[in-house]
Length: 62
Image (cartoon, rainbow, N blue to C red; front, side):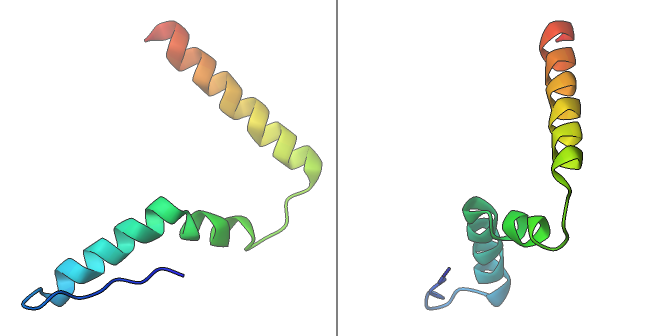
């Protein structure tokens, strides 16, 4: 569980920004989106293969 202590004199916007950063670092949204719907194993393999191709293109061209 992510906890953000609001410091004295700190604005709510700043505290909210810190909370969002901690959520991103912890991977909370990524886990939520991943479990939001079901992917068949074949679809997971297809996505992984496409990501690997994309990485290879980036490394070979850049």
